[in-house]
Length: 238
Image 1 (cartoon, rainbow, N blue to C red):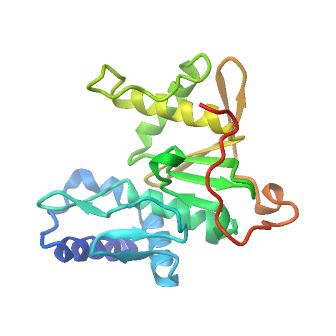
Image 2: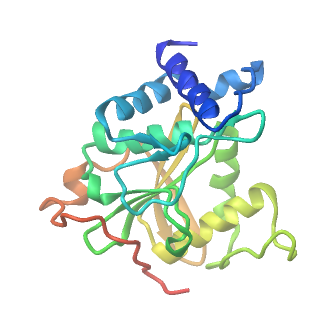
């Protein structure tokens, strides 16, 4: 591993010890999940104070409204792998793209659609919707799947209630989140991978790849005027 991934793995070991467990051994198939560039961004977040660990294993960000997020789970403990690219994406938005901290949401709670990442305007409407998975291949399923729904599919039923499973379920949830927020940009994030799309809404969602996320000046031409973090506003009510 590299310097940053070594540091991140050491943090995971410390989180496991803090809750009285041992971290499971690093396996060969885990290597692709530990991307040095992602880990470097996360370490930057921790060293700057943008990220912090509380209660031994919980991670908190600059989003004061975020839901609970823990970095390790199970016994023996394993990293919650999605949080490495997830946290890296959050740090990227704030430090590399200079998006206002108050405008960037992380892991929104149930009452706010359970969005992985969201970039908001002052009223809370979603400008960029970010969806995070562990591995690159999972993004392919999301990209192709969201366009298969005719209009808003609504919240998927529980699996026990006969609802969709696997990537079909993930695409269903994302399609619903897009329809009700009408986010103009979608950001798909996984280990070492970030894809940006312009989103248009007609009978079906259409995703048009673009090279990069919009600059801060394009999203907030007059700057972000709020001093506090807004809650998610829906463009289309459920």
